[in-house]
Amino acid sequence: MLARLIDTRMAVFLAVLFVLTVAVPLGNLVIAGQPVPSYVVALLGKYLTYALLAVALDLVWGYCGILSLGHGAFFALGGYAMGMHLMREIGPRGVYGDPVLPDFMVFLNWKELPWFWLGFDSFWFAALMVMVVPGALAFVFGWFAFRSRVTGVYLSIITQAMTYALMLAFFRNEMGFGGNNGLTDFKDILGFDLQADTTRAGLFVAAAVALAAGLLLARYITTSKLGKVLVAIRDAESRTRFLGYRVEAFKLFVFVVSAMMAGVAGAIYTPLVGIINPGEFSPANSIEIVIWVALGGRGTLVGAAMGAIIVALSRTLLTSWFPELWLFALGGMFILVTLVLPQGILGAVEAGLRRVRRRPREAAA
Amino acid sequence: MSSQLFLSGVSKSFDGFKAINNLSMVIEKGELRAVIGPNGAGKTTMMDIITGKTRPDEGEVYWNDAIDLTRLDEAATARLGVGRKFQKPTVIETLSVADNLNLALKADRGVFSTLTARTGRTQKTEINRLLALICLSDQRSRPAADLSHGQKQWLEIGMLLAQDPALLLVDEPAAGMTDAETMRTAELLRNIAGERSVVVVEHDMQFVAALGCKVTVLHQGHVLAEGSLDHVSANPEVVEVYLGR
Image 1 (cartoon, each protein chain N blue to C red):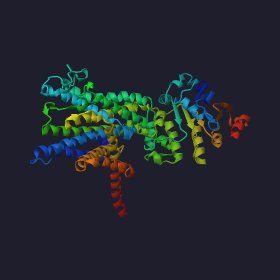
Image 2: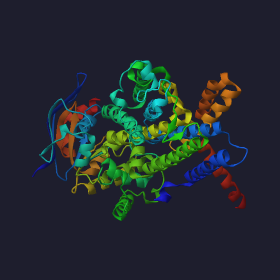
Image 3: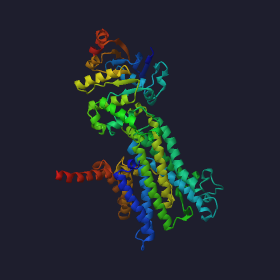
Image 4: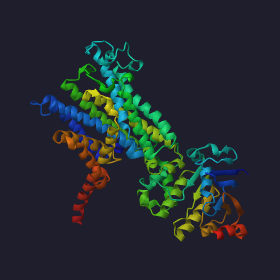
């Protein structure tokens, strides 16, 4: 079983991830002089949640051919679910000091908590909602879309419309999610101060563990017989139907699993960056996820995670060095990879390694 | 004797064009049948209707004299025991030859049973048997994309057999094959018939002759003639339809 899940690329990636998971908190908390500053811990944690989001998209796009341009919505919903819990955790410490209502509700003159905020005072209820809400949306959306056999570009367009509609809805104050400003000013999580270095390091480790778990789950799915059915749907959908597989059920399954994974990524993202707002639903965000996956290597899982980290890292560096150039750089990277490295960065690296390994053997012969 | 497949008064039109016009046909259990006809005679639409891809405007389609096929979708007819081979060989290109067969093997098609399915010894034996039958044992681990056109045709037939269907619908299996491959395919289909019903749609008259079975001639969506190849070739209407084009 373990051998099935962990091939060479997965082993290398997990090993590097493990070293990071140990080294980063050590460098931040234990080693004198703090070689890893606190903001770097939060930044790296954020990258890891992006990587998990990329793995989620690769699962549906790379393996089943569902090009979702709305995966940012599932990420944001997970983030909002966690954000709602963190808002309730603030309790009477808010600016207005209301023991129950978050500040923005007091500001809007609301008298009591809307029904959909009930239960979020419990961490475990929120943790469940982090997966249930994106999963339920994916189920309803996928049920109609896949049953009506909406595929290809048309499906991509309606996923884009979905996230756009959610963005407009979440921008509205009456929705009860903080409108424009979103949810912020969080104080603590499970009783730990969110400003403390130890909490930040803990969230970083949580992000790393979630990424590893997400990768292994995705790998379990893609190496199973169901994974082969997904590839069959991607490559020859009607053949798969005539083999007796109910294509819409398989698509629905993988779409829901992927949405839940994206929700978990969003839930860890929110406490790490300290804010979640409707901007996360913006269509451009969802398109960027596709770029991560294409860049790293579609249908490789590990490559998708790498792509997310590479793009996020370049964004951080480039926006501080040449802020106005970032979007050109992102577009350039995408064009370059599509033209020069159709298998993505991981595919190119592996092809390079194979060539290097073959050469000494040929020389010996 | 009960029929495997029963079509009666089936019609289907697309934007006013009658692709199938009052078509009736009976396929007995274990029968081998060739369906010929010029382009646009409605052969593919007929297969689409049988497999549940297209709903007929009117008419009856019955399986085993008992089940109404017009109410079922592709997956349901496939599970019932209808295997379909496309005109253009359609295999899953990125999967290995053995995986292609494994996906086609008769098994529970549910999502969760597929997720936890294991390839046990019975499945492996069956895959090996099929690989030998379609002469692809040496290619088992190669991606199907690497196969030649003729080999893909054979792999698709192998996938059909893996489904263990009671009826095979085979659309132009000899297209793009060499003469030797064509003759071997005809022999393979003759061997399959008897145990299963086989309906072959074909243009190649030599191949139809090699099948040596009852022939149905379709023209403008209905049956023009039916009988042995000699019988239908002697029919002046058939000659006119074929030579007139």
